[in-house]
Amino acid sequence: MKISAGGIRALVREKQYDQAIEQIGLMLADVTGEKITNVRINFDQYSLNSLNGFATMGKERELFFKFHQEEGEEDTVEEYYNARILQDAGYRVTVPVFQRSVPGQQIVIYDRVSDPRLSDVCSAIEQGKSTVSSENVVAAQIAADRQYAAIAINSLKYCDDITARSQPVMQLFYNRLVDNPQNFSDQKPGGRLRRFYLEGQVEWPGLSAPFAHIWQLPWQINGIDYRFNLKQCFEQAMINLSPARLIPGPVITAHGDAHNANVWYCPSKEGEPAGLSLFDPAFASAQMPALLAEVKASFHNIFAHPFWLYEADIALEKYSANIAIKNDRICVETDYCLSPLRQQFLDSKAENFWAPLLNELDQRGWLADDWEQIVRSGLFACPTLVMNLLAGDDTSHNPTSSLIGFCQAIRAASPPVNDETDMFVQMFDAIRKAM
Image 1 (cartoon, helix red, strand yellow):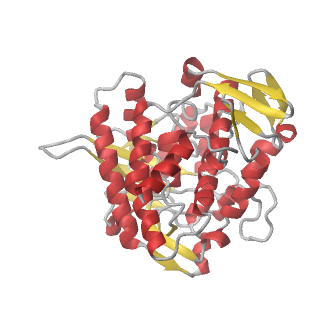
Image 2 (image 1 turned 120 degrees about the vertical axis):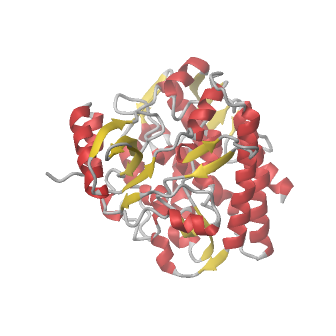
């Protein structure tokens, strides 16, 4: 029997947990060379394209495992685990004790730590259930943003090696938009764009329609008209996120996928302040396009919260979103907004990471004139390509969370028609002010 990460995930989806646990144990034993017992799968909302959990190796060594298997993308996956690259650059990163990078069986295994993931800490704060103060969490985030900016600037270089176009981070962006990511001249909608949306059905409060019937309609959100429709946003993403657009260009050493479920929150100890430690550097690289490096962290740790992307049922309870089609325009009214915690994360990311990096790029003459639109396309790709935003039996979204998600995607990619503000305009204004 050939064991694969994809096969294990399929068993979990089908709720055949005993078989999944058995296969995980066999895979872990094969990787570690030791007896594995007490395998437990961690059922959490953050593992959108991965599976993680705990196990015991030998008599008492506790392990945390996590593996990826991007559905339909097995042949494009190469070397994944690059913790040493990050460690050598100065990042605080947890290094796996075992790993395997064979396509279809990519797995990292860590000694289990007692520190919580930052995603769980933040969710608890926003639900009023946390014993950790938001002040300590924000302070740790500010310190991390400053450190990441310093490392980015220290590692910044200009890369004209076109082989860098095939690095793993492209898997998160361009490769999910097209069927043939190696052919940069063939930019036809494909991949997850086609599979999730072009063949899908929109189910929003008060509206049911084929996605293909609405994606060319303009948007108005809370009275603000937006410049681009969904079709234009996807088309721009295919151009702006193309590896040929980004390389040759400036690159840095970065994690690339530092959403908070890949970050340990390390509480203060012996007078030391609380800090953050990265793990699971599946897409890390020393040749990360500078404008993409912190895009995933910026969206998933700020604009995907509170609740709508990862905890759709909670969002349904807390927020409303209503839609009407008026004069062939999608008009949405929603009370969704950033929580105070995410607003502070936004302020820090803009001032302490983005502004220093962009200022350095500008001083070296490497800052693209359309840098904002490149970053916006990256932000847009985060919610639309990490998972299917349409509501349905085979997705995690309900009509309300789906509509909020598309509002966030439109806001990410498209500036307002007039000089009006929203949470994304606020971020870019804060960046420019701090530069």
